[in-house]
Image 1 (cartoon, rainbow, N blue to C red):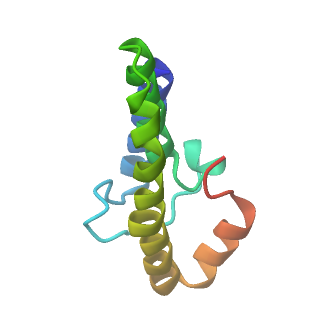
Image 2: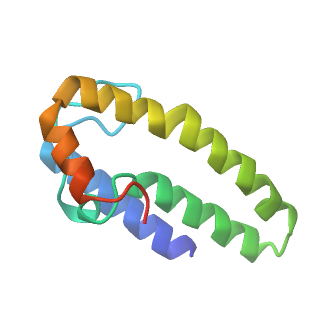
Length: 107
């Protein structure tokens, strides 16, 4: 899980850099990236972090990591992902709407 998550994260970061947009979500987006892992998910970097987190939880053999993951995912969804989607729709309008209609939010 850790290796899978790290691989997706590296692939996603490289794809964003090649598209000329910011990886840091606090910086302005310069393009809609629809190649690489973004062909399959609109949020592959968040999915990769989740896979790494789950992998670490399994590696240390603890149950509380899974319990903490559920509220963490809810906060990420409502506080980050939905906000980013509103921003991208305002900034890129129809281009983002078309991308959103073709590619799933998560899996």
